[in-house]
Length: 162
Image (cartoon, rainbow, N blue to C red; front, side, top):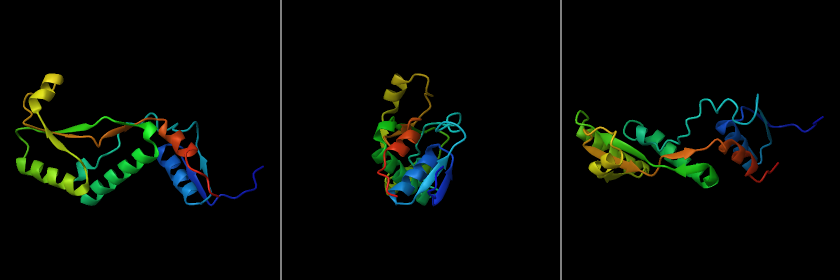
């Protein structure tokens, strides 16, 4: 029987729970993780795999946008083998306010989220199912996919201190 005492109990072995346990270990705080099944057991059915770039928050919540991109960059640094940079696109349609697009571009720049204007016709040629009504296209490299191995990577990577 185990006689050591953990300072923290983390419930759930998905990306959040394993990430918290990793952070605790790096800070020298002892913790134990409990999970009802295998790692990422409850996560897998709801896992969409996207790490937010912060672009969706850039105009209306600049703090959230900065936080998203900062976390995105941290995860890319600590678990590069679990992350694939797939990029993302943001489009403007005729009914969209062009002033909002301008605000979005400048807000992304302020938050540190990369985006660049790209040729719409080239994208439609490569992806013919896209709407021919797209009038402006912005691409970002900051929209990576995270695989389910992330939870395990969070547990085996850190040097345990405590």
